[in-house]
Amino acid sequence: MLSKKTKYGIKALTFLGKQEKNTPIAIAVISKSENISLKFLESILLTLRKNGVLGSKKGKGGGYYLLKEPREIQMTLVMRILEGPISMVPCVSLNFYEKCDDCADEAACAVHKLMAKVRDNTLQIFKNTTLADLCDC
Amino acid sequence: MLSKKTKYGIKALTFLGKQEKNTPIAIAVISKSENISLKFLESILLTLRKNGVLGSKKGKGGGYYLLKEPREIQMTLVMRILEGPISMVPCVSLNFYEKCDDCADEAACAVHKLMAKVRDNTLQIFKNTTLADLCDC
DNA sequence: AAATACCCTATAAGTTTAATAGGGATTACA
DNA sequence: TGTAATCCCTATTAAACTTATAGGGTATTT
Image 1 (cartoon, chains in turn green, cyan, blue, red):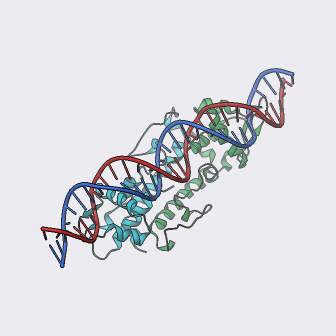
Image 2 (cartoon, each protein chain N blue to C red):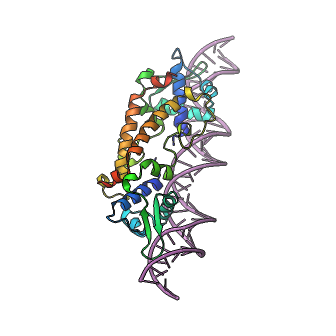
Image 3 (cartoon, chains in turn blue, orange, cyan, purple):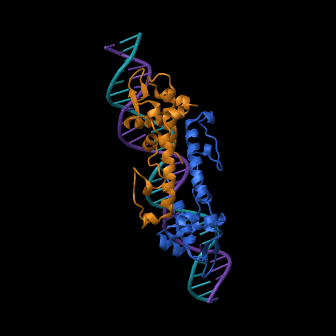
């Protein structure tokens, strides 16, 4: 299951990407428009800012804005920041690899084999989908 | 993340699929071979039996066995029984559909759009992968 | 200086997962 | 016929994760 954190994060990014000008948008504006708990959204946007996806401006007239063009923001990046590993098991993860305790031979493991296939496909989708694609609705 | 339930389930099914003869195998045998908690595995195999994937035989010499040929057991079935929905959000699920509370227009939702693509791809893989494929190692 | 809006940490409620425990029912075989 | 093997079923629990909520701090603009 996709966490609400990621879901809300993608919605917020899409909202920002759809703006005509890339000027700061207050959290409260996004929160109301997308029906997202303000405080929860706050922490999500903070995470995206710390990871270089968003910039922010404090004080009156402040808010969050995209640091890159929508077409340059791949969903791989967004997913990894908000959701974590793209693969369903750590033993096939490229960025978050971990060996399984219970599994002696990875090459002979059915789960590994299956999940590697799934990861390859999912990764392709996330790589080839940018925020710009999601903003065309 | 894939639950351990599903992971263990697939491993157990693969173990059964690799047997020369399709005679009952005791839970304890699978448990030891695959390093899976016996009691936990027990509940998993029970679920698979209740869903028509496995048969069982009680008493001495009893155990679990496949009810169908490995090549006829699609991973879609196994995943849906053990893991639940294949899609990452309920609003794009074919078998477990649910509307989002926060989302007014599904067709215009970025998350929906993205996750529908992911589901399509993942579904194809699970459909085209049978237990027999996983047993060739 | 006052209002606005982001920044940061802590905490709590709710849910899910993974496992554990314990006993019941059935079957094979000596 | 009795006993060991083995599946069947329910309940409980411990840990982890998710989804918020609360409260105050800091910077900026007007």
